Amino acid sequence: MISIVVVNQISDWSFDIPDVEVVTSRCYLTDSKYSEMRGVRVYNLCKSHRYQGLGYYVSLLAEARGHRVFPSITTMQDIKSQTIMRVISDELDELIQKSFSKLKSKEFFLSVYFGHNVAKQYDHLSRQLYNLFQLPIFSVHFIFNKKWQVQNISAIPLNEVPERHKPYFVEFAKAYFAKKRIYPLKRTKSIYDLAILVNPDEKVPPSNKKAINLFLDAAETLGFRSKLITKDDFGRIPEYDALFIRETTSINHHTYRFARRAAAENLVVLDDPESILKCANKVYLAELMKKSKIPTPETMIVHKDNKNFVLEQLGLPCVLKQPDGYFSTGVIKIADDKQLDEELDNFINRSELIIAQEFAPTEFDWRIGILDKKPLYACKYYMAKNHWQIYNWQASKQSVEGSHETLPLKKVPKKILDLALKAASLIGDGFYGVDLKQLQDGRVVVIEINDNPSIDYGIEDLILHEKLYFIIMQYFLDHIVMKKNQQFLKK
Image (cartoon, rainbow, N blue to C red):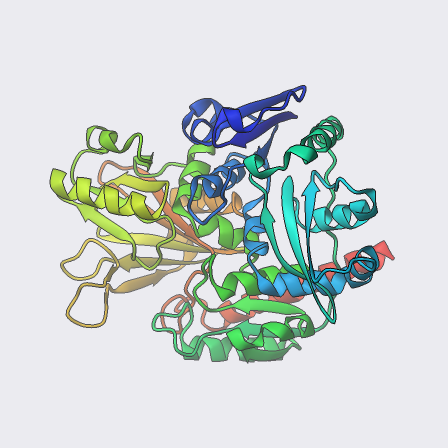
């Protein structure tokens, strides 16, 4: 495998490590050579991994390109979670207390370089922490309050590695790249209840109340003990066998933390955290669709260095998209040059990379619901009256939504179904809603893939009725049985 170290500036990496290519973050993100490379391990040593910053996008697009990246987006999110900190403190409690038993201070910062610490007495703890958080270099802040606990974890910028540590850093790096050793995290736990995460106050939830009740009925008919939970029930996740998220998902949000915790506890989860990460960012999806040759409207990934070429490549009108928008939010139709310049600056001030697309008006969007790589339902969502989107958030009422039409799968054009299945398969085998358009020139294009598609009573269930809810609940049951069988065989 090719090893690539990504840094903000080449001068940040002043070490001679054999068979390691060092590139800048800008170069990795914008040079087409890297998007086409295969068999790559990317070590993201950018100074900051803040949300939608350069370091964030290095890891996000590395995953879209099929590169193995450290840290992953999942790891970046995990180290921000205080709940994860408490879990780590509990899981490694005996080792932590033993390692720091002779310390007299009330706090300690442990530097971990490629799974090692410069002091041998902390090497075992460093390896265990690296097993949990595969960051190339990071610092763990411990505090003493009756006993030692993890306070927080943060990546160490290369320019903050102390001079006295650099000889050790180089030694550890050479050994690491020579062995290319990865320490997987394995956890197993399983029980027999289903939790459905909802938000009673959400204005446009993915399932209305009648649909939620039908899910509960189907679950109980299949033998589940099912319960509605809210964001206040995070600590109860280990009590369940499966988690079904019926609240709009987002990365910097409790829904993602619920998915991560449930996956760590070996629950069956819809939406699984990897699918949330992949579907929540339109930049990731654009890169993934391009790499996999999935047709989309003509698309540019825009940054400050190429923003002046949007007009030339896409013309007007065009559409700008916030990477993490949903339900038609964060999407603007651009009508003239002045608006384009203003909105490009506004968008890029919030995110290092954004999406610009050709304006492709249609009467409706297709939505194909897919579960476990099989089509489940098909809908046409029509544009809101006198508007170019399904939702018109600027309408006089709170929101105005277009009409809808649910069709039997046999009446859906084959090229629509085939393309939807192909696109969803790139994300995983969970539950997805693939949005597509049939353009006037005959093209069929994918608009986006949703990890948290709508199932509303009276819309998506118009063809299958109650059977739709049973199919989804059967998915949970089948996958629980599969996990139990795997655990039995391991024993």
